[in-house]
Image (cartoon, rainbow, N blue to C red; front, side, top):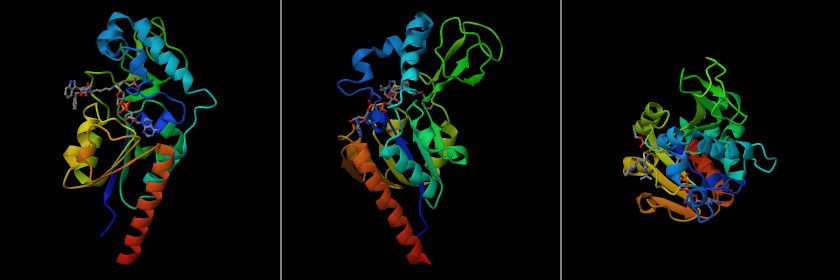
Length: 247
Ligand code: BJW
């Protein structure tokens, strides 16, 4: 049998060992910040300075020398680029750690469905711009010049995730699904495993069982930097073996 089309879904757990906090772990971001204050369009309308401060802090963190892609990011980059069938890495993460391991043409494998910290969007003209500085309530848009409309290019609660059409197409063709470092609490991503049940092989790789862990065909639990590289080598060796058997 030819290798099946692959989808990898990742969440904050994959970046935890790179020094970035998850959301729902005991010392995670939601233990220190209320969702209603920083991660909804209503919060931004009410108190944009507070929302900017939250994302400015997280954007600045990406430039700390210690914050680098870890062995799990590198392993997944190898998986999606070496996989002998279509392969899409859908990440819920807004950091750029996957992007750093998938430069140039390899970036076509990556879909950041909850947006990107290193981009900003203008509410006046809609332009999305690469952004590495702090944002403020007065930042002018580099495209239309108007101040006051720049927001982080992030999908907040109640907003539509990015790239859904491409994800739907990939889901329709998918025969192998890997979920890495996500608690399975946020939709639509949390629903992917149920939607694929019975027609794709599904594997969870997470520190602990996620909310939907029982829906997966198989699960392995432990730190991403340990279990992801091992799983990737196994999956690629399997695909290689099957290719040889066919030939
Ligand atoms: C490790 C590890 C290590 C730790 N190694 N693992 C009621 C029912 C159903 C749905 C809804 C509902 N009410 C509202 C909704 C919809 C809502 C939703 O899902 N709410 C739920 C809370 C119930 N969803 C939305 O609003 C989404 N939009 C939407 O649905 O639009 C409608 C629509 C859908 C489809 C088609 C068309 C329209 C938008 C969701 C936006 C989410 N935004 C956030 C914040 C913004 C980004 C940011 O600031 O960074 O995105 S929320 C936050 O959660 C962030 C994450 O991407 C997301 C997922 O979190 P993740 O990645 O799973 O992190 P954690 O912390 O939860 O888990 C980490 C895991 O790692 C843990 O399990 C650890 O154990 C593990 N781990 N160390 C391996 N070393």
